[in-house]
Image 1 (cartoon, one colour):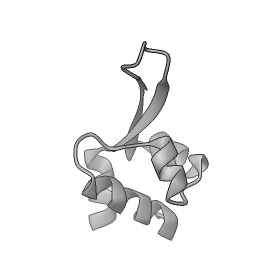
Image 2 (tube, one colour):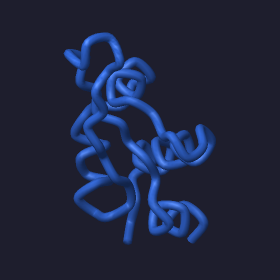
Image 3 (spheres, helix red, strand yellow):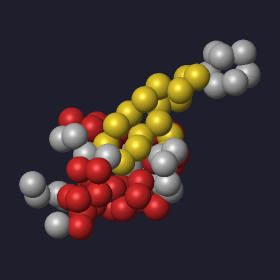
Length: 76
């Protein structure tokens, strides 16, 4: 599998933030387009989950986490 520099950078960032991953808005703020993270998810390198906020449960945020395959991809 061939990763772009942007995909590698996103995976490296996800590795550094630990088990909880990052929210999509945080990744977007750091310059990662949603299509980059969607591509990582589609390739099986990351997962995305919908999290509900605590304040009344009205806030929904997508959280991105790296998978073992993503860790292997950036090492290889």
